[in-house]
Image (cartoon, rainbow, N blue to C red):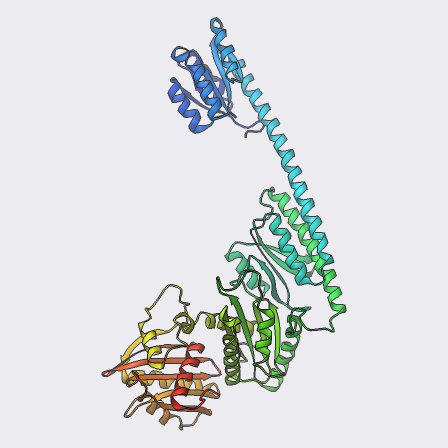
Length: 580
């Protein structure tokens, strides 16, 4: 609506040239927009389409049909101010127009003062209406802010910062926020941030990151970033979308500043209380450790590994409910913790990040040991009833190969956990198949299938001469050996082939490696199957295909689950446990 002093849009439905000329002269210097039409039909169409501020209608047009136009305009656009134009001799038409909803009557011939006075009255009424709306809007804003900040002030009563964050998201959702995430410092003085909670749940958001990485994520998906800080002390970071959108920009910025200060104060008070009870480092919902304790232990482990040039590993375990198998609100926390603890050593440290994510620290563990632990944990989870209801991913990272600080190691492990969850083994249901069926299913998988994750972990189909394939596999085995100890399990056939060439190359120096060549010719459909699976400090590699004449059609990928499955099938063929 137009405020005082704002321009108006005027539609005049007049036929005589004198009235038309006067309107053009009068309004030409005011800056108002004027549209003049001589016919009632065209005028009604213009008013319906443009919805002007004022309509000036000669009610005598069309043998007094202008009266009907007033009635139609009032029904179509009730906010339009309508002035009936009539001659002194036809004042009864003006009375009829007022009865039909006209705002006023102007007597023809028109004068400039009459027109300007009418426009001034409309401007004044528009200004009054806008003022009333502004007062009402500010009252709504005051009620919204009072309710929001009253609830936020209650956060200080929560027992833990995580509980406070969960309550904060509930408050923001009630205030109109469509999406919100809260991140807390991973430990006192740490640069890294830990995702405390998200509404709605957002597995794609970083669970553990530095602030710059979080800012980049928020910018990418267009979330507002509110730093919950008092002076230089960062209490957390809030990412939000849809909150306080009805406020004017300056009012909204002030409200966000107040919100940030209140939240930071509450989180600071809770953190001080938590510090007083820091002796108990166990997560209250499970027998796992808290993330703060995990960060402290991992920091000491990194210092010791750097000082003594040792290796250690850590793993990320993600457990997400399948779409329809788990009732909403049911958390896998307790069951997951017990199964994981049953698969690891007493010296390993398991920490709970949230209901669906856990971190596992493996002191003095190299790559092969970490991958063996990954297999044990994953097998233990998949063999349980809960494992059938959840999508499980386990990813490992090795110090210093995958990073020299905790944030890089956790990012690498979390990426591999997601790769594990989306592995071709799960996507194609390969666990129940025999070796020949696995190879055929992989070769039948179309390249670039929708939903397949990009990267080295996704199987790629290749078709090369046998000699080139032998060279490809041999280079992968040699590269794995250069990184330290490695495990290689492959097929062996009579004559020249992958198994014979790689086995003969194994004794030519380099780092120690465990190598097993398995004869699979007795298995159905495996007479021309060539398979190589290796696990090393750098990761895992899987190769599987069939010899066709002088060439090999195969798939290869850096997929740990696929490598594990191929090792398992070759172990069954040999009658020994080759992966242990």
